[in-house]
Length: 169
Image 1 (cartoon, helix red, strand yellow):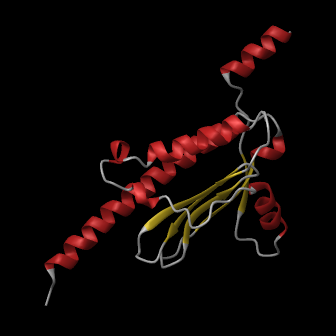
Image 2: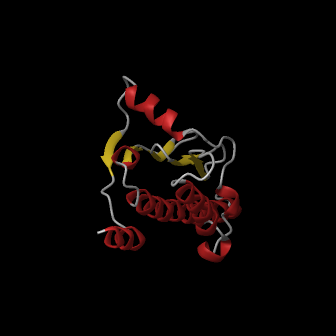
């Protein structure tokens, strides 16, 4: 016999997961735009992977690793999608600290109920938060298992960078 509460629960889960997935890909786009502003070529290198098979417990749906930002869309123990994240720790007055701090603010803004219409605020997983993305990048890059695809994010000069270059010239 068909259980209507199970169907309602699956529809709610589906809406939740779709909202998480939408927020994740908005965050991925925003993070990519942030990384694009970095002049240093090595910091715009990313390793990405996407799971094409059926989503199952513990699987990563999508993952991007850069030397300064980590982002992963994963399926947790209740068939719910969650977002794992990380950022490189910068000491003192690093020129890159503004990128990681903007990334963190965007992470929470894009998963806020005001943005999604569905409360997915608990999708941010803090089971682990990576704080040495550059080390992870090197490990994955050197791994004999090639599950990730290398992608270089094209540099995009910001208005502030353009203005600074003009004032120097």
